[in-house]
Every structure is written in C-alpha cells, then in structure tokens.
Length: 131
Image 1 (cartoon, one colour):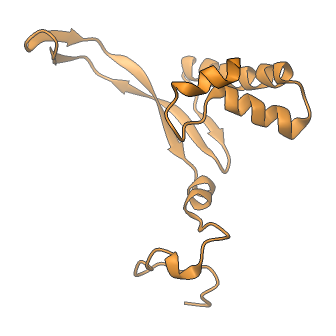
Image 2: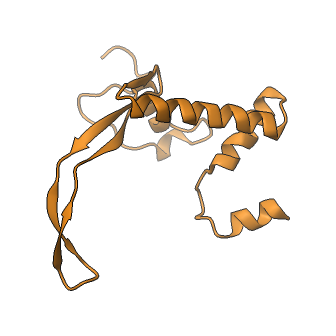
C-alpha cells in the first residue's frame, strides 16, 4: 500500500530513487535495504566529489562537473518586478557520454524498419554497408 501511494502523485514516465533501488535489488539478489545503501553510497560519492571541486567521469555514461554562475540582478516575479540580487553559485552539470547517446537513440529491436526516422545526410545507418 505504501508503494502504491508514492506512485499516485508522480508524473508518468518518471524514474525515482525508489525505482532505482528496486532495480538494483532485483539485479543483484540483495534486499531493498542493502540496495538502498548502495544507491545512497553512489549518490553520496558523486555529491562529495562535486563539493570538493572534482569532475566525475563514468565511462560510457557521462560526466558530472560544476559550473560557476556569477552574481546577477534579477527580477522577482511575485513582487511586481522588484529587483533582487542573486549571489554567485556553483551548479552541477551533466554531459552525457557517447555510448549513452548511442543507446538512447538506438532503434528499438521490435520497431519495424519502415517506422525508423529518415536518414540524415552525412550519417551512416547501421548495417547499410560501406559508405
């Protein structure tokens, strides 16, 4: 029942941390509690590295790094445009890796070839031969 309630308010097509924990638990034959410790450890490691200014590279997946945003003057939309000072801050940035991009854009195995997107000039279609 508790799991059902957590899904009700969630946007369709969104994966949550709890979903990741379930996937890790299923893939490793661990308990959900053990899987949660693993997922939390990975997230904590990423956060700690970013806080210390390090770049994180996960080969085939992507990289995380910090970008510096400078101080600026902005307008508060809730107070009829009153100008407010926004302090400088560091924001995390994710750059997907080449392999991740390929996996995301790869055609689904069950999709018929006729429904594939039209070829873009200058690109090769897998299995199209030398070109």
